[in-house]
Length: 377
Image 1 (tube, rainbow, N blue to C red):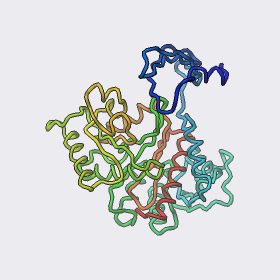
Image 2: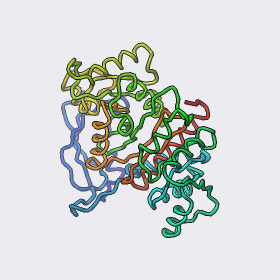
Image 3: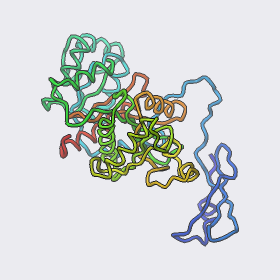
Image 4: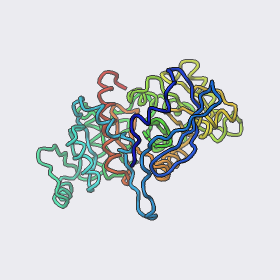
């Protein structure tokens, strides 16, 4: 990738001062550079200059699989840097009985994120480790007969305080979450349990959260309020002091025939009345208005959230799951997945997720676990 000299890069900016406003449009681009046309708002004359951009990846191979990569845009590097001073937390890895889930737990252990407690049939676990060349010496193993028993035992250990987090292994999500939300497990809090995808894509200037796309099928108003509270808390733990939450619908106006728009309006009023705190809510907003200032401006929407949302609250699980996976597989978004609303954070990843996604999810769980020490859920 060609780089302009520092002197050449500074030349177009001569005469500019702090506080000056520029309007920039992309005049041309190739694989390594963008040509920007910049106009100072107080002048009519345009300045044109080029600035190097990251080289565009070669996708000419067509059918080659493009793996998800949470390291995209240095997201994983920043996450690991943010947690490097935090001691690892004891995390129950529930039924890691395949190479992918077991290796993810061992990777997170090597990176100093977790002290794994492997909850699985010992013979099966040791067989996988032997076949893959994994070293289990020194790790605590809780021997249980099957995946259902692993989920129940993990929930009990977390409720007793022996574990500060849970991580899904090779069992089904429903099996793990049924054990977590069971009244006898002791992991329930006053809030509804919900899932957050933490996503980052090159086409949006900041990481953002999509919720709920994995737990609640068709949440009602009060359940959506808890989903919003959980996502706001996560955003704050990740460093956004007052996150902007967009409540998505197909349109940006309230329509009695579209229940999602009524819920959105009610959630905003709940925030006005102090029933949902810590964030700035607006809705209903269509997806384009939530992430594009230009789209919101075109439709005449005046909002502190439109075009700059930190959180996208979806109407139901189906729309949220499709949105998140479209962003990942077609939009190249990096991802992590976490469940909030229980007494401990729960790393909930898919079998198709990459190693980087699993590591990022563990890093987020580490942040949450330390947060819960000071502010129990």
